Amino acid sequence: MGKIAVITGASSGLGVELYKEMQKEELDEIWIIARREERLKEIANTFGKIKTRVVPMDITLPENTERLKSLFETETPDIRFFINNAGFGIIGNLDEADYKKQGQMVDLNVRALTELTVIALPYMNKGGCVINICSIASFVPNARMTVYSSTKAYVMSFTKALRYELKKKKINVTAICPGPMSTEFLGVAGIEKGVSGAFDSLPYCDPVKTARGGIKAAKRGKCVYTPRAFYKFYRLLAKLVPSSLLMPFAKT
Image (cartoon, rainbow, N blue to C red; front, side, top):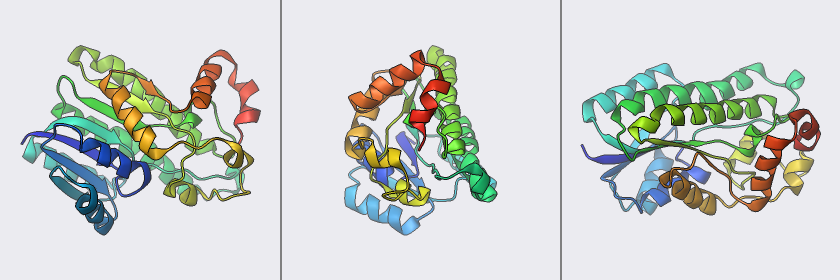
């Protein structure tokens, strides 16, 4: 088949905005992946100008990784954009946390992202882009979002190392690192007004602008895209100042 984009976690928030941005690309098909089939169909019917394949699946299940791998083998697509958007976070002290949910976070944010990227790479060629949705939480460890910030630090390291590996093939890898956004992420994370002083006071990022800017950065060959001047400065500060000094300010 022809040129495609693949987006995980496409049923809400930033995933929807990324899907809308993909309508501007020269693609033959867009594959959107998430657990909620009806929601994916609604998004495709509402915003889809390019032929869209709805692929309902929980990407943390090993059998679904195999299913997607089989789809790639059967269709042999030219993947122009592979976007790892699926992920979630939870706020709270780790000694009071549900260990299963913390493990599920690692499973989705780290293992699934890694496995899906690996099975997609054989179908990517010169000019293709892997885009990983990361976070400002990758810059400095975040107390009270200990596991989440650790998974995003992995995503950042994974992005940089893979980008170096793929330079010779002229495939770019970009980490999009937004701050807080008004999406379903906050509800899943248990972040409501008054729960976190940081989330109550930090400037929020616009999902539309984040998706648009992130895609442009990836196409320009950038490694990291951070929206808003405030967070660009924070990213720079994290490179210059020891994390032990910044962690009290990064506490959620």
